[in-house]
Image (cartoon, rainbow, N blue to C red):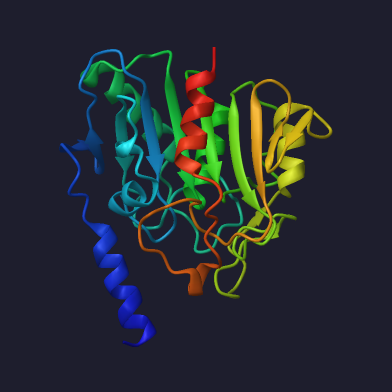
Length: 268
């Protein structure tokens, strides 16, 4: 089977969100929702990557398979992708304010699904990770954010009191660990991001990690980074089929989903 056919089948396999309990319309946008079986459960808004879907990120992350009862909301990006605040993004994002869209998803979880308003979290991968970081800077109701293989524009990097989980790889071929232009498969720049170290410094006010245990770095009491060495641009520990040929090696020594939830669950 030729590569493009195999990758097309992979997209179809991951695309359909058969797990969703319902689809909700928020204006002209949609979100797939899986409601917790009990009132007062935490809520996670999970943001997919560029050129991806809600169904794909659900299957890649498998947050719905955690033992914890969670309200899960998987929004769909507009046609141009997430507006994650990069002023030099290519192709240019649409005029939509996706931070407001994420806030609408959080409000939906609280008002209609009885989520705990003190345990609201945003998680994202790739450009979804970039939007999660932007939400952490702008949405005060958040109890925590997580960015996996994402980044933040140098124009946006700033201090934040929002607890953070950051997963980054020194070998990421798309979102460079040392900062600079985002590129997919060697194509033109999609915009600039901060170096991972600089992102952590700006966010936490720490010059360097305060503790290191293997790949896990603590940057003060409310931020951690998992610093991977040879991993590609993939969600670590996924059991879903992924293309390591296209995006680099899958990190199998870290379950990103469990690590992110363990951090959120331990927050005071």
